[in-house]
Length: 481
Ligand code: NDP
Image 1 (cartoon, rainbow, N blue to C red):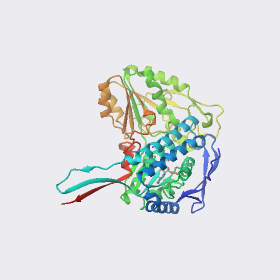
Image 2: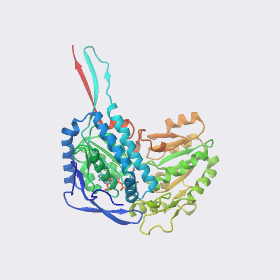
Image 3: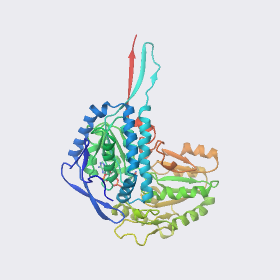
């Protein structure tokens, strides 16, 4: 895997350049633990330069483009993403450790975000508002200005697509700080935006440490909106820093998302969703379904059927494209195994395997299915961010809702039941930004607004809704006598 660009540079004002300090950080392959190259250690000076370049773009060529022209650029970018699909998928698999097929799905999602927001760019309209005699009142949706984007390492391409796609469609100029553990496709995105013809400064990418480049971006007075996806703790820091500048933030902070399986559900249909929604990307997914709530009458049956699937799951190097790859880092493996140490032997209902020939230096964790826990146990409450799911029984609808809503999170939930009335009742009662009925995740759903409540964050990305988050509404009241 040899990227076509220099990986150890920052991309500012349409140019690849060394970061101000000249420092670099190692990149490693989670499948082997080996160093695979270096990235720039961008810092506050680089963030200053990127924000300045973005400002210039807004008052220059980028700011002068019409919505149609911005849409065309995004469409071109989407086409370039697809043309580079093989290289991007290989980069993501190597950098993040996700199986090649999952990395390919992420490339498709990035292209879809570009296509969706390309088509949406010239369809964001204001309103005319009936008002007093002698007035014509209307609203305009305008770009906010410079937007800051901090993305994590689990789905770089998807999160860049949903966040920058919408921000660019609305005419903002973006500064992106990718996670230090997975920068490659963010850098590739910058180069593809250059190839697509985005004016200098519309897209800027500054890799570096969260505490340096990330903190500088979120606290920068020239940034008008911060979009952050990551942990609750860092989300708090981001919101606090943005509050000092009185700017809005979109926070997407993960969850402990439940699937509710009622006795009348089609278990055969549900089964792949129950498992895959927990194990996709080795469980390192904000919307992972890590709690499976099952009506007691069918609890043993669902447990056994899930256990059987688990026993066949294999964690292996990303390029061998098996069920799961390694976790992103030794630190993440330590977090996950630390949680697993809390489980008693009898609570480990089933386990998958790590491929015997998986390199020793890789960060592999075999998937584990847990049961016999109380809903209040830490393992059933906290986001583990690894290949671990917890099964919990319930006796009736009321108890199912109490357990489902009984964590500080509220990102996604699903209901498996043949009863239409129950589906509608629960869709209202479940505390979540998205509720799925007899499915989970809707295959990514580029078009579907996404975001959480409580500790899962606030604000919405994806779909048309994101365009409102990345714009500023102006009301114009004209008095004409
Ligand atoms: P973080 O929240 O720390 O990292 C997410 C992003 O924030 C990265 O780009 C990181 O940069 C950046 N960042 C870190 N510190 C700051 C800061 N002070 N100011 C601004 N940006 C900052 O997550 P971790 O990688 O540490 O993962 C820890 C846990 O977080 C996981 O176990 C999981 O529970 C959760 N998580 C949730 C995700 C989700 O999708 N909701 C995604 C990733 C993690 P850098 O990596 O360079 O430090």
